[in-house]
Amino acid sequence: MSNYNYLSESEKILSVLDKLGAVSPETAVTTEQMVSKGIELGMTKDIFTENWHGHKEGDHPWWLLLAPMSGVGSEEEVAKYNVPYLHRQKVSSTKNGHKTKVMTYWYDESYEHEVTYTGKAYKEKLMRQQDIQNLLDRTRNLPKSKEERMEQMRHDPRYLEIGDKFYSVKFIVAHPEQFNPFWVEKAMEVSQQ
Image (cartoon, rainbow, N blue to C red; front, side, top):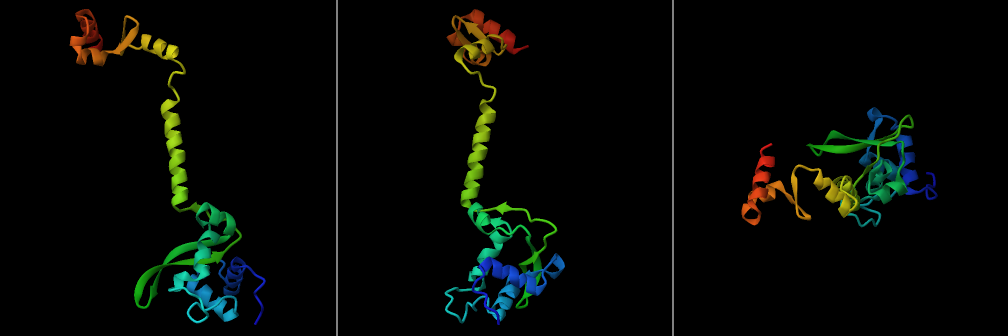
C-alpha cells in the first residue's frame, strides 16, 4: 500500500478518479465509489469506523470538496478548489431498491466545466449589482440640472408653464379648481390632442 499522506484531499480524489478510469460520462463514477476506492487504497478513512464524527455518507470530506472542485459553490470555495477538467453530472440510480439521483464525476482535459456560483453571499452580490444597474437605467436620461429640466418641460407638450412654474396637463385637468379657467381650457385642449 502506498503512502498518500503527501497528497492534498483534492489530489487524492483526482488520483482515485485516475485509478478508476473515469475519463468520460460513460466511465464516470459516483462519490460513493470514489470514497470506497480511497478507503481501499488507504487514501481516506472509513467515516463509520475511523473516528470520523460524520453522521451520514454526505458528511465525508470528499463529498464537500467535489462540488467546488467541479466548479459549483461559493466564489471563495470555487477559487480555492476548482479543477477545470473535473466534470460532473446528475444521473438516475437505484440505491437500496429506491430510485434516486446521484452525481457522477470524471476527469477530461479536452474541455473545461462551466463555473456555477451558489450561496447566499453570491445571490446578494447579484442582487446588489442588479439594483445598481436598475438605478443606472432609471437615471441615465434624467436632466443633469434644474435648468436642463426646465428647458425639457418648456418643450414638452405634457406641461404648461404658468408664471415661473410648470404644471402637468393631467394635474391641471384633475384639479381645475386650483387654476384660472383659461389654463384649464388650454390643458383640456392639449390633453385631447
